[in-house]
Structure formats: structure tokens, C-alpha cells
Length: 163
Image (cartoon, rainbow, N blue to C red; front, side, top):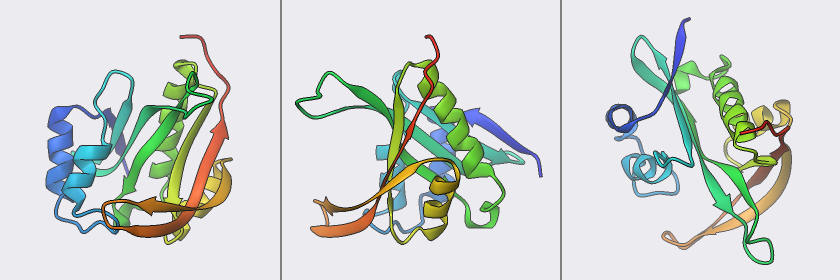
């Protein structure tokens, strides 16, 4: 299968919304809102789509996050969303997307890259582990739905490259 990887711009984000937007999201009102909120197009972010025959079959978006005090001078790369169409899972697409964002983050000089995954995403948990990420069980509070969600913080130390 020939998968092409492309940086997400406004036109590609619209294509992703058209493809994924009607899906139900577990902790958000709808997936279109999730995509608009979590697929970043800012200069200090990196968003990549995986395409098969021109159709988006997966995507990832990372942004820059600043730590809370007393580490408010520290920033790292945060994978805000990673989604792969069900019929394209377990084919290395997510791993390729993660690897590309790791490269971007290292080139930006970040020491680490991190994310969060709900515990119902069993395939994702095993993927993070296989990709060398540390996992830490956590419960987060989702304000808009007034709900505690079980999951895992994931983090990987990067080898920084010069900018």
C-alpha cells in the first residue's frame, strides 16, 4: 500500500474534517470540533496527514506546550491528536507519523515529546510502549463534560538536533 505523508494546511484540514467530521468522539461533542481544536496550523506546531490515493487515512498534530510554574521557562512538544482510520490500523502509519513529529520536535531543540492516551485505546497503549515511550497511569478531569477519564501520560526523551 502506498501511503503519502503531507503537511496539513487549511485545505487539508478541511479535507480531514470532511472525512472524519461526522464521527462521534468519546470525550468531545463531535469529531469536527476535536479536529478544529487539536489540528494545529501555527508556526510552532507540526501537523501531518497520511494519505492513501488522496484520501486522508490518518493524521497527527503536535504543538508547543509550556510547563506550569516553577518550570514555566520550559517548553516541550505535545502530541495533541493522533488518529488512524480503523481499516488502516496496524500497518505502521501511526508509527511513521509519530517518527516524523519526533524528528520535527528534535530539530526544534525540544528535549522530549509527550502525549496522553485514554485507557480504552488498548492498541495505542501498546504502540506507545513499542515506540519507546514511558507510560504513567493518570486520571484527568474533562471540564466540559464534568467527567474523570482514566488513561496514560506518555513521554519520550529526544536527541536534540540543531535548529
